[in-house]
Amino acid sequence: MTQDHTLSAPDQHALIDLVRRAAAEHLAIKGTQAADRKADGSWITATDEAMQTALQDGLAERFPSHGFLGEEMTVAEQEDAWRECLDGRPTWVVDPLDGTSNFRLGFPVFSVTVALLIGGKTRFGVVYDPSRDECFHAVRGEGAWLNGEALSLANEPKQPLKSCLATVDFKRLPRTVAAHLACDPPYASQRSIGSVALDWCWVAAHRAQVYVHGKQKLWDYAAGQLILHEAGGASADLDGEIDYLDRPLEPLPRSAVAATHVELLEDWLEELRTEN
Image 1 (cartoon, rainbow, N blue to C red):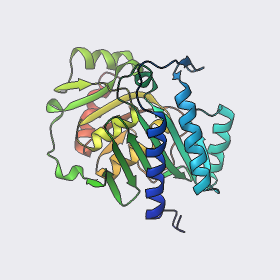
Image 2: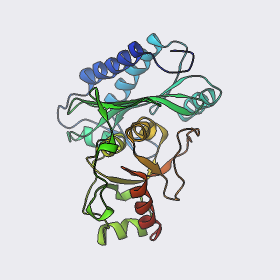
Image 3: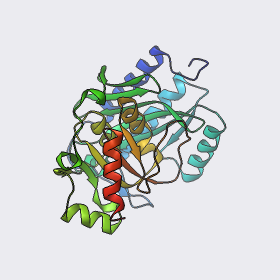
């Protein structure tokens, strides 16, 4: 890693290769997977744990001085890693399997997400979708890419909210917001795909134009948020607090509102505020 805390091109390629290799080994769909419930009610499979071990070991080998914060660590381990990150230690924040509910039933929408944070700010992010062999990545201040092709929302038409495709996670939204969106939708159509990281990336790729989610964790969004912003999109939380990448991220769960451009984000927030 260079002195300005960016990853060299060889390191970027090595990281992407590590993610792809781990996914090829562990994430082939083979029907229903045995799963258990964690304390927070979410699902975990042996694959989540195997993926995290593979990524943690691979990252430690190439970046021995870096920290690691993974979804499947204990809360105490996560808190220790976050404190070190805020103190300036480069830290890899990893969700080894984003979309475990889909994966365990053989529904082919899930991803691996890896982000490099320094001082709480995301510098580099990768989201890999093994079912479609699509690798999204971004470098802060340099851009975002899908399988090596640049992503730029500036080249896409700016649609009004009423003609947009929205990705909406209903179950974590305030009830009044969820009811309004379900019964009187302000957009043209809606989807819910079950992988937070891919939600962010699919907006960055203009597959959906707006997005809302009521509660996601650091490892869910750190990489995807960077990818969207580097592609030219914009995001906020349900309270209307705009995301700026020069501010440290927060470790606590947060809501997320995103759009392909800032004017659309403002219209989307206004619609959501009326029912929040």
